[in-house]
Amino acid sequence: MSELVINDLHASIDTDAGDKEILRGVTLSVESGRTHAVMGPNGSGKSTLAYVIAGHPKYRVTSGSITLDGEDVLAMSVDERARAGLFLAMQYPVEVPGVSVSNFLRTSVTAVKGEAPKLRTWVKEMKEAMADLQMDPAFAERSVNEGFSGGEKKRHEILQLALLRPKFAILDETDSGLDVDALRIVAEGVNRYRESSGAGTLLITHYTRILRYITPDVVHVFVDGRIVESGGADLAEVLETEGYERFITAAQPA
Amino acid sequence: MTIAPPHDLAPRIASFDADSFGMPTGRELEWRFAPLEVMRPFFEPIDGAGTVTAVSTSELVVNSAIATASSTWVPTDRTAAVARAGARSAVTVNVPRDANLVDPIVIRLDAGAEFAYQHVEINAGAFSTAKIVIEAHTGADVSGAIVVNVADGADLTLLIVVDGPKTHRLIAHIPATIGRDARFTACTVTLGGRAVRLLPSVHYAGPGGRAELLGVFLAEGEQYLEQRIFVEHEQPHCSSNVIYKGALSGAHAHTVWIGDVLVRREAIGTETYEMNRNLLLSDGPRADSVPNLELETGDVVSAGHASATGRFDDEQLFYLQSRGIPADLARQLVVRGFFADVVGRLGLPEWRDDVMQRISARLGMADEGASDD
Image (cartoon, rainbow over all chains, first blue to last red; front, side, top):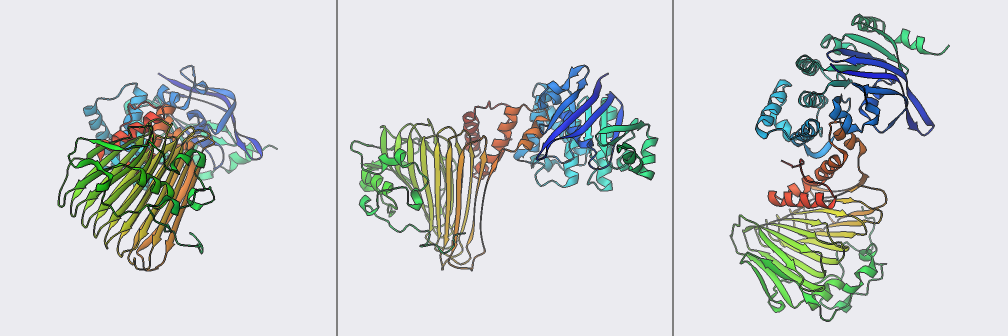
């Protein structure tokens, strides 16, 4: 049993007009085997939360804490966080020209597991994981994310989830830009991983669409840099019909 | 695009007499970037200079008296004329007509002295196929030419690796003549040397010739690395593809890339493209990049050029690190990836790996866990 604990987290970004606070006191705990959905309108800071957990250098944590089984995540470098068991599936995966998917995956798995996988079992494992996501084997020879369609990028993110086997998966708008078929394939990939690993999941999304495929245990409404309401899966239904209007209004200072 | 140039891009003077060319002052277009004080020993003949010889296991590689040199190439600048007059012997590689050589011919050039002139001639016979690798060690000051003739229907691949200490100077003119329907693929890899000036040029002796000029260079510390390319399309239906990539690190590194492509009136049906990309790995280095495309006919298939110099992409670093890959290995992956497509075009897989390892070593990176397979 693992636990990812975020306590009163504040984070800022440097802008031309000075420091801008984006996270304004986020408190959230995710345990192994549990799936939390973080839902919010555009610009609410929910993607920033994902990046801050992963350690993106663009953001500066001003106060609060993140711990993974008691270990101070904020003291870790980006790669140490990944090796500690955190994984961020990105909304906009980055192109790395000239680095093949197979080389990238093998290098990542070697780094996270601390030793190179045996070549024969590795090739088999990679091929099976790709087949699960209905990815063409030729995909492995392409450069990382270069020229990928939106659906291919997201499938590639979930492929990494399946191979790196983190303790906690943070999925940042994994549903954005996907057609129904691609969304189903990606969501099945996430579910397969949740069930086989018992990992915790933090699902960040604007729309309720993906929640038809991935059922959350807890839904948080995220507005203006903090969680304003939490509830069960039924809270997502309320958002589906009523939108974020009520929460945005409530979050405004009087 | 050059607007109303005072003259076309072709060199105006060709001569064996060094005094036909003025003494470089730094105001000339072709000398405006180079550190003249560093290059000065190449401007006047040096008594007691050595001559570069070749070490090779191939019987096609011969060291012989300079009088046996048969190329019709005439020096196009002062350093080339000085070097041609000063070289006492020539290295010749004659690939016989119709020969189909499977294994690359590997040649190590040996200066044999602190300062040496160089004259190398490579002749690919008609309809031959060959791959040649030249290793030029930067442990001495060397000036001269590598003259290439690719006869009709021949297919020649030439890799030149300039590697060694960052102490000495090298000037190499690399003029190539491409015969009818012949194909020439050249790649220069420039890693060593205090100051290096490479001048590859291409002329076409008949229609249908194809030339691909590739280059990778990595400048660190005080290194000055210049690549000055000239392609003259004077025959119809020929193609040229020029791709150079450089990486720079350290506050004083300086690279220069000049890509001059001239398409003559008679060169209808030309396809030409040139591209230079530079990657700045730290603050401070300077990368000059000047593509020039001059068209004397509009009746071409395609003609384009591109140049871009950018900083190392921190988002790539973040992405790789977020997958557990430590920062130094991530940086290595990105730099190797940046160069991989250029070196990969050569069709010399062992040498591609060799070059990649040299680059990794230069960048002070361990090479484990980052194969390109």
